[in-house]
Every structure is written in structure tokens, then in C-alpha cells.
Image 1: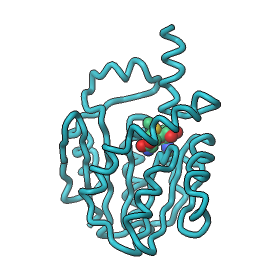
Image 2 (image 1 turned 30 degrees about the vertical axis):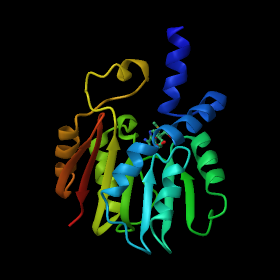
Image 3 (image 1 turned 180 degrees about the vertical axis):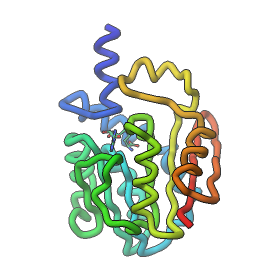
Image 4 (image 1 turned 30 degrees about the horizontal axis):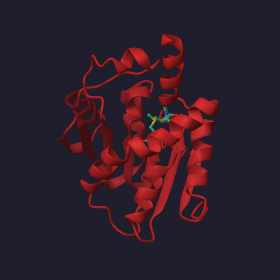
Amino acid sequence: MKNILNTFFTNCAHPQGWMGRMMLKVMNLCHAPLTNWGLSLVDIKDGWTMLDIGCGGGATLQRLLKRSNGGRVYGIDISEESVAKARSMNAKALGKQVFVEQGTAAQLPYENDSFDLVTAVETVYFWPDLPNCLKEVYRVLKPGGCFAIMVEVVDTESMWTSVVEGMTAYAPEQLQSLLDEAGFRQTCIHHKRPSYATIIGTKM
Ligand SMILES: C[S@@+](CC[C@H](N)C(=O)[O-])C[C@H]1O[C@@H](n2cnc3c(N)ncnc32)[C@H](O)[C@@H]1O
């Protein structure tokens, strides 16, 4: 039983096959409150170019697009299943205002200084060599652009780290320090119950 549960929940880290597709539907619904709150903390402007890393099933891409008239939204995810779901969720705007591709946070396939905003919802737990990934985010942000990390597992001892293979939980303060080390400025942490945290940093 433990193995089946582990296999199912490990689809959070890398959705695959039918279990992955189920998980993507669940995450699109369940991450809505955290994402809506986290995005409300950013003053998103019309015409912005934005990137959502670990975009999963693509609900955040839709939300970002709604908040920025004339904006363009890019999504990237390591999982083929996530990319397929994010593309179908955003079919109408795909190739016009929404662009989704498969890839990793460790090596972003974008030019320096490309984005006004980068978001990462419930995904940094799975990024290998997080300090290096944060430097990649810094590189692709425009000067003045900001990065918003949204997490709801904030206890480093969380039981989820033993259920989901390859998951590392970070305290918001750890994430803030890592942002500082990667060169971000004006870093801050916002909290909301039950355990939501959004950590924001700006590229100066
Ligand atoms: C828990 S899901 C969250 C998905 C989506 N952000 C949401 O809020 O519903 C984590 C996502 O991060 C992706 N992911 C994991 N490691 C990644 C990496 N190194 N680079 C890009 N995406 C990654 C997974 O494939 C998965 O789709």
C-alpha cells in the first residue's frame, strides 16, 4: 500500500502516465488558493512577459494571462505529461500569447533579461541544485523583474518528503537566503494560513 501511495504522490515531482494525468488535474484545482493569493502580492502590469517554471497542468499560465492585457506567458516543465496538459489547458492562446515547452529549471532555454516576472508554484522542492537554478532565474529576469516562489510545505521535516521521492522541503527563511545569495534584492516573505508562503525577490 505504501508503495502505491508513494508512486502516486511521486507524480507531484514528475507527472507520468495516467497517474500523472490524474495528479495534474488535482493540482490544477488544489493549488488555486495558494496561487491566487501569491499572485495577488505582485502588481502585474499589462504587456508583461512572464514565465512559470514547473508549470504543471497550466492553470497558473491561464491566471497570469488573465492579469496582463496583451501579456505573453511562457511555461516550462520537465514532464512531458505536464507540457501536454498545460498546452491543452491553454489551447486558445497557444502559440500566440502562451508558449509551453519541456525543459528544466537548471538550464532555462531563454535569453538573458527576458522576463518581467517569473513564478514557481509548488515546484522548488524538486529542483536539483536549487542555488544554481535560482541563478538561472536571475539570469532570465529583466532588471527590475521579480521572482515569486509559492510553497505550502514549509516544514523541513514534513512527512511529504518521505512520501514524495526526491522532495526537499525548505523553510521560507532558507528560500529567502538562497534568493539573497543568488543576487536578488528586496527579498521578502509573505505568510497566509494554513501554511502558505510566498517568497519574492527582485533583480536590481
Ligand atoms: C507539484 S507540481 C506543481 C505544478 C504546478 N506549478 C501547480 O501549481 O499545479 C511540480 C511540477 O514541477 C515540475 N518539475 C519538477 N522538477 C522540475 C525541474 N527541475 N524543472 C522544471 N520543472 C520541474 C514537475 O514536473 C511538476 O509538473
